[in-house]
Amino acid sequence: MANLPPHQKSLIYNTTTSTLSLTTTSPPPSPTSAAEHTIKVHSTAITNGELTWGAFVPWPTLHIPCYDVSGTIHTPAPNTPFTAGQKVYGRIDAAREGAAREYATLLASETALVPEGLGMEEAASVPMSALTAWQALFEHGLLTGDEYTATSVPHVNPATGVVVGGGQAKGKRVLVLGASGGVGLMAVQFAKLAGASFVAGTASSANRSLVESRGADEVIDYKTVTMEEWVGGGGGDDEGKEKKKFDLVFDCAGGKSMLDGWNAVKRDGGVYVSVVPGFREPEGGKPPGVTSKWFVMVSRGSELEAISRFVEKGLVKGCVDSVWKMEEYEEAFAKTASGHARGKVVIKVAED
Ligand SMILES: NC(=O)c1ccc[n+]([C@@H]2O[C@H](COP(=O)([O-])OP(=O)(O)OC[C@H]3O[C@@H](n4cnc5c(N)ncnc54)[C@H](OP(=O)(O)O)[C@@H]3O)[C@@H](O)[C@H]2O)c1
Image (cartoon, rainbow, N blue to C red; front, side, top):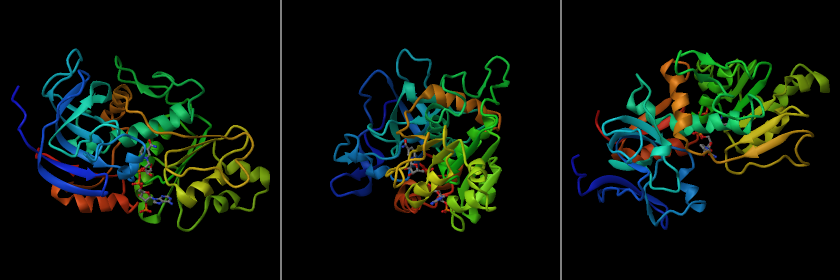
């Protein structure tokens, strides 16, 4: 195995000055445990708000950002099924150093093989969004029932290639707030895979067809109608409104939209799940019988492998807003921070 170059190109986030810069003199990564692969990075992706996460995790003063990665294994973690040269992808735990550099480390437990036929740029757009949406719907939102196991959710039977369990959410109504972002687009697709009877997503009119292309039954333009108005539309009485509400509301939007989302969750059994910072209950408390949850996703290679099978079948698609060179990092981060990316903003680190 060739040695790593002594210096590499890397983005650096200075946590004292809150500034990003590009350097060509960063040292190569040295795995801190036998559980880590060293990866030659192909592409990475930015997550909205990620530069603020240092408040919750112990970053050094000079930290490498970006946690989604696609690349090739340079040195596999020993005693794992992975081998040098495999194309892999995954989401690096945000408490560790990220992937905005030529070589990075990825825990074996975070790693999955890149799905057959998926390009490396699109691969980098998948892990964080897909795992967050998967866990929101199935682990925390309990869309397919109170039990959450690998087989209690839709999955592809490895022996037959047949999709199993695509009907557990039959009869359920699911609303995704912020359906045109990376997480929201995945959530729409997973809710449909699980057989939810009605899946709606909020998005602006410019993103309607994108969200529809991922299977949404209705796209609600958050710029022209609130969920309170939509639920009350048609002048229904309380019972009529309750019928329009959702068994599961998943908030990927935050702010006023998050608060408005409380108007759309069914009483007595409805679930409200959010992943956006600042999640809170409405004034006067949440509706009776509603459970709610805010969570931080966990990176699990095994879940990503299960999701990969759907990607290979063309049943789940990532979404790349735009691809940038490392030198264009300012524009790339600004695009994500605008809150208007359609899917993920990708930084391409290596040539194909
Ligand atoms: N807790 C966790 O583990 C976790 C994990 C991943 C992500 N997150 C968080 O989840 C949030 C979503 O992330 P993301 O990557 O999916 O997307 P994002 O990049 O934050 O979302 C951008 C999209 O949201 C749409 N949008 C903006 N405001 C909206 C509103 N009020 N209602 C509906 N849509 C709206 C935009 O469409 P328009 O241009 O049409 O407005 C754009 O398409 C972020 O806050 C991120 O930090 C949390």
